[in-house]
Image (tube, rainbow, N blue to C red; front, side, top):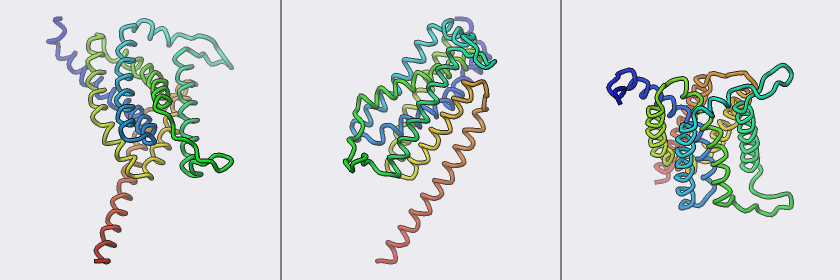
Length: 244
């Protein structure tokens, strides 16, 4: 346990924790969008279960780290491009986000009615949990493979994961509530899902897009939306004052 007193270890813990928090933004956005259509009590439970599963997945994957590293080994080649299990997982996860985001946007624009005008039932609690479980697995594999190159001790990786999930647990509640209270932000969050899905597919095909570019675009769009919300709130306040 001598490594605990090593400053480099603590530096890697801080760096890895920050990276895990940043990568966890994808998870928070996806979970917040999914639970927004559930009743409040179920939404809170689904959010907590989703983040707990993310923590369990990451720790389990760290405990079989040699197997995780093996996922990056080429499995087959297609059109001159080598594909590994990691690539396949990223492609499947990206496709899932694109389909899910597109369906949610369609439902938001066209309404919840089916082809014959019948209103569709809201998604079931366990249906949401299964979807969260699937995307948790995708994000966990990507997160842990990235973490492998940043720290040498599994204990440091587990500590970083626990801290980051704890922070995500605290932040996800306000984010989910904000999205539910402001419908326009849900459309923005869905567009983020499409952006993340395309980034995962590109990564799976060997075209790595630096996450800094993606998160900058997301942060800029979110800032613009916050300004729009403040502007609408100011108009409503001014309108209420005129009526009095």
